[in-house]
Length: 330
Image (cartoon, rainbow, N blue to C red):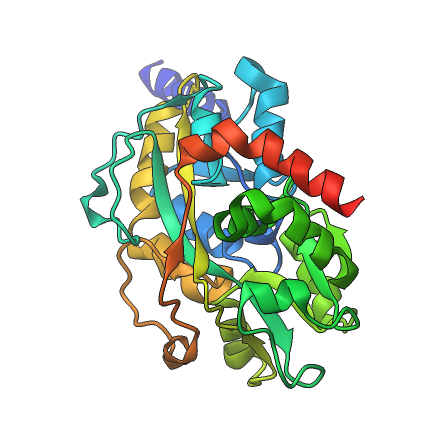
């Protein structure tokens, strides 16, 4: 009887379903989880540290993340939001969805340092106009030359209502031109081939040859130098300086997986995450790496001046500045 009972118990245990893995839902932007992006490698590395699954949700570009959170509110299924930047963090905080990240940020390496207790950086780069050297032998050397230059030499931009690079260019225009930004948008209009919803769409059109210029990052040429072994695509250095983007992640306060979410944010500053940034997200790592940057990063444009509004300034004026852009470019 005892043997039978033991055997029966073993059968019951064998038939019992295994405990379900925790699932961490991370909202991000589409290029992060593209075939060439860092998402797959980062998911695999983090899942080695936990009995969990990482579920990526990519509704579009960076500002699209904010727009989705506004629509979902307290009903959001996100545990972590990765892909906002400092131009929208004040507005994101106002949603009341994010809690303190609770991570030691002393290891964060971004220009100007970091003290925000809600959002945590994972990469950064200065924006730039990237041009095709086979189609443009004399690129603009300043924002003013871009605005007033040959209208036959087109540029592809991103929409500031859905894209963080698109918003970055709008802020760059405002930082340089101030009250004259509307007039300068009107002067730039003939050079704009199209305004794409996000960076992926814009850069795809550029590499297909639709225009000789696209708005992107000083780090973008590194991709072509490393992966395609070509110097064809380069960033133009602008005399007025370059606008800086710092990309961040935040923890959703109401997440049922808050401990796992905080573990992910802590992991985000380690080599398991940061090693993938330079050569898969093509940005500058904001945390610890265990491998050096590729040598081609030493060939990239090094901006002499950094332009940047505070998150609060952008929150207070973003709607008006977008209206100014729309009125000038219709």
